[in-house]
Length: 420
Image 1: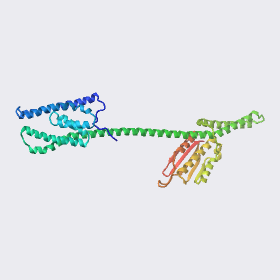
Image 2: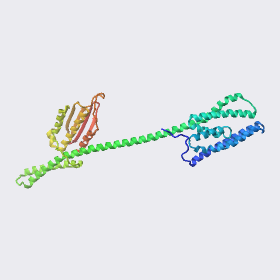
Image 3: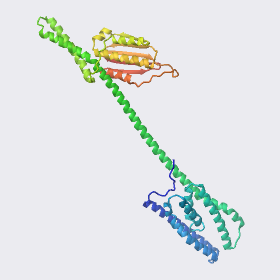
Image 4: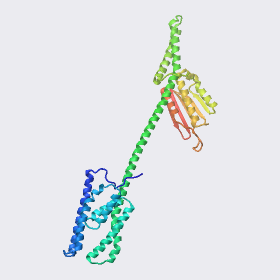
């Protein structure tokens, strides 16, 4: 990924950017004039206010050349990066370094060259500054009529060391700015990734909730279909006995009371099951016949025929007693047992399944237990959505009961109950 260069020209020349440019110009101008006055004062003191003509000419030249350099160094920050930008700053660095007044501006130019983080401009400006230093030293010796061979030999090293400092400062500033920009982009990318992950998690939760609601709706629909025949049977019983009471005048008081009791019992059962149907309130299309009490034993027999080891024990209740209760209770227990056996076959194939139907007080409890599958290294491919257990719980709750599951260290247990 290409990053924008840290020394790119400001995208908008706002009042703040102009203030920075003006501040750079003023600082370079003030420092340059101060250095020029100090240098001029030392020269006048050295020659007792009568320096050679060549030195006076050079000092005046510093003033003439250094002032424009100090004035333009600030606005040049708006110049777009490129070859012209590099050439102008190299020229300013070399020319400005020739005198004291342009030295601060030349230093700032070196910093900007360093911010480009390019080896070629750095090498060129260092070479030119070394050559300039040697030439200025020779010129100074000529103007002062002195010699200093030892100083001349060390001069290129000193010049390179001094010029390398602002170049390294520019490199450091640019690297820091690029690092900060990169961290900022990473932070933005991380924030976007977190937001995307949160949106995905929210979508998964909504999808899961919708799937759970769909399973529960299917269970309600199944319960409503199962109740269809039961309510029809109770209503037919009421109509038959009530019709007999309307035209049979030869019935004894005992027979009348018996028929009225039958009508009353059928009405109570129909009323209870109608409430359950209204609670589910689903379409009756595709209604199937209601299973009877032996369906529990038939479920066990079918599982055994498929190779499953399933046992069902009755405790405190018999198939006949169960059949005499609400037929909705029979259907609920049959559906719950069927789902529990199928769940055991899926997750623990070949393992024995122990089921028990127990009446305890005012509850009818179905308990199913099966061992857990073998160690993880054994192959076992049984994808599961958990919808079967949700359906069991929904089926029990629609009958006024509930269902729970429990995973032990070596077994899985399901317990569902409905009112008796």
